[in-house]
Length: 298
Length: 298
Image (cartoon, rainbow over all chains, first blue to last red; front, side):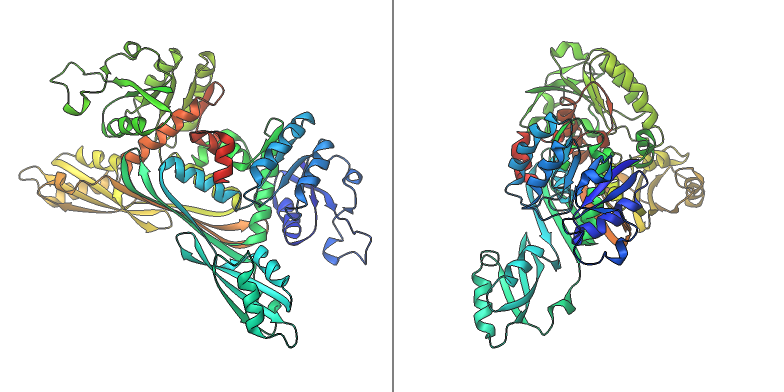
């Protein structure tokens, strides 16, 4: 059994505990949280070993870093130095290639494996983009997100003065463009026009068609369902008009943590180094005998 | 440049020539055909070096075996013994795992790489099946083929006594079940009822809802367009109701040969041995600098 520590207990961490426990070849070593001593232990964690330092968990093969992207790189380094494999769902698209290059020598030096950006975008969507591209090398791929809550946009809207709480929903309008529906709870006396203008000027929203809608209770609208529709029309060899489409409707944190669990398994089968999901064979993400899997899936 | 020989000039071989010529990192070494001396050379092949034996082509890195599945294994062995990588689109699902195991030691012994079953099913569909399964390990995947021509079923129908020519179209009726629409040209005096009964009793058709329709000219109905719709509803971690769908509408031989070209490229990046597409990282199927690809696709 592969011994796995879940690090962090936010949205992803909660689902990661479930996903590790559901995996036939993974064993939960425990949960690592910064503030285990604060307040009384959560009732759902009574049967989960919870510690502040991973070394308290004994042998740990892989750590699932269920933390915000900005924090992940430093944490990954700490774990790799301990010789523990790491999996994160680092989602800053513009920086992940450099991040991988930073971790790669460190992982090799410690005979460990890091799998970065193991979520659905980046992650499994990236795999589908690569698949579509080698099936039709010439053409355009559109990634259409939603409908679903955008965490980054919601946090950005919530950070605007006069907005007490916010939920930004991403609506696909085709060809990779999106409309933002931003539901806001305003501070007393703040006019909607003022808040709406501030939202629309924010860099997160400035490029997109954005609607700001006042509501009494943002929490009453919360739903972690999300989705994507990726499309490519392109050319295979010299034959045009080849059409491909990938679509999913999913619980967002449940899928992210499931992908991280699959990447944890895959990390055990790679040579030391840092990897994106594109650099790991699909078979390695699945449990069981390779020849049996080939017989069943190919 | 990777030097590639196309072996065989049937449906797939024709498109493979185009796909090799369209690839930025591949160079066509030539075409290997059994019957180069029969008749006058085909006009479209005037600029293609055509030989009967691959050794006449000088250095060849990879051979694309564009031949029927029953012939592929023996041919793969011949080429591997010469130290030439092989790519085939072997499509007998029940036998491909054993076929890979047979080629694997042979490939290793000759420091060569064989990529088997590199088409769309088996092939890219297999990759999607693996992807869907690690995203939602519990659940059911349905592979719905068509609408499109089934080569195997057409050949089977054509082989029945009293049928001069036949085209079998696969129609998806959902949940992985298919209807067969069989268009037949009958020999003079053969009653439709008799031919239809024979078709429906054939092992290729016996399990499916099958319609036999007489036509004057089967060739006038030929279209190599095909498609698939794969669906999975399953459980990520312990969260149910996750939905995934992969759909494509494609020119069948154009896609198959394009996938073979991508596999030829990937073969150059693997250690000696025999592989299915599930055992090769997605990145290896694409041309270009890996870090640049990661930056663009992940």
